[in-house]
Amino acid sequence: MEEEFSLYLIEPSSRPPFPAVARYLWGKEDFDSDGNSRHPNDDQWTELTIICRSTNSERLDIDPVSENPLVLKISSTSSSLVQKIAQFLVANSGGTICTEWPNT
Image (cartoon, rainbow, N blue to C red; front, top):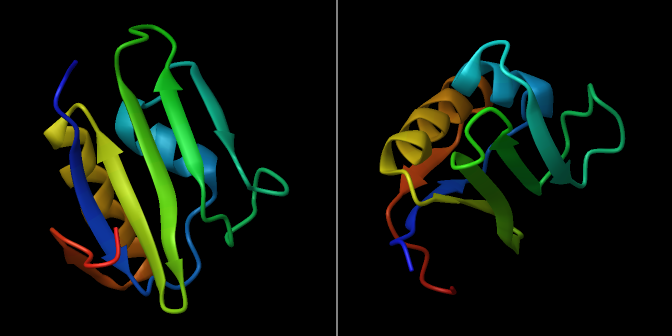
């Protein structure tokens, strides 16, 4: 089993629509996604799984680990994907990044 890398995004505000997350990672590559976005432009999602279809090996998961305060766990077997999206989300949503969250 591959090692999983994780970071925690603490108290972000509105998030970029989920297609923007995939475009930031893979450009115009086709991707598969699952999550709790109500529509493609929803900025209140808290769960997202995206997979690059051309490789089927690049996968990123974002899951809530706390609702109050909102804390999102960003995880993947690729530490570079985790770092890249953590920085993207902080730049677009605010919040702070931590390497641990005590309640998980």
